[in-house]
Image (tube, rainbow, N blue to C red; front, side, top):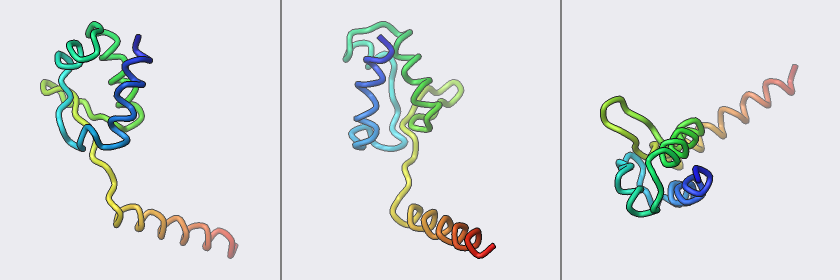
Length: 89
């Protein structure tokens, strides 16, 4: 059951159908998917471990912040410099 919930949420998070930083309400998912709280919590924990959702104490789950283009470019630039430095050694 948790895999089904995961497979339901994962593409929505990746396609930004669930916008970054938006709350994910377990009770809404219970009604929407038709499963109990436990598999939803298990799927959300798995997504949290992957960095796709964030759990905030006493608040609940929300979609994680996504990298924007400038952040991706900076990471790419840093990686390129690191690889170039390693190749020179």
